Image (cartoon, rainbow, N blue to C red; front, side, top):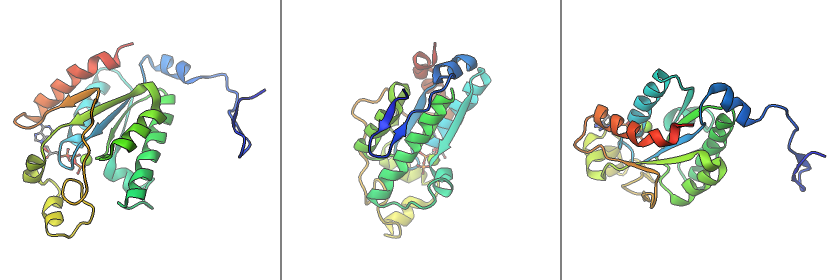
Length: 202
Ligand SMILES: Nc1ncnc2c1ncn2[C@@H]1O[C@H](COP(=O)(O)OP(=O)(O)OP(=O)(O)O)[C@@H](O)[C@H]1O
Ligand SMILES: [Mg+2]
């Protein structure tokens, strides 16, 4: 008898011979979702990119899900209302979970400003979830203003902009916190790789 997933929709888990554990073993790695969170301009994409390069160089298999790219594709029908932000994060978590089941180490770089949404992502993804707080202060992010978005937000041209007109709720107990203020990209990436090591072993 197959395991029934939902009585209401008559959904059953398909019976398969290959399990997520088999795929991970085949790749010789522990699948994880490295969930970067932090303000716009904090350094999520920059550090995820650096970490992915190092992981590939070390022989790992990875996938990077970046906020802007996902919003242009999979989540193109979503905006920045609270409801859409919740759905944005839910879909990303479900996709990351599937990729973990494929054996991959997934890096996600989304502002993901709300604790409740990140908690839901943690629940969807399960034990492979590693929350990485890129703890760059608002003043530094605003000074960097990589995309010119803070300027626009201060001019009132972007509604619900995180840190300006919409809150950012810092993680209370992230697995990892990384500082970027006063550090080069290489320094922060090296620090992060050191902190990640215990999560990537067998
Ligand atoms: N130590 C550091 N670590 C990471 N980024 C740094 C550091 N020092 C300076 N920076 C710069 O800060 C900027 C971070 O921008 P990045 O696009 O990575 O932010 P983000 O968190 O992905 O923002 P968004 O949410 O808007 O996508 C880059 O221009 C990067 O070069
Ligand atoms: Mg980014």
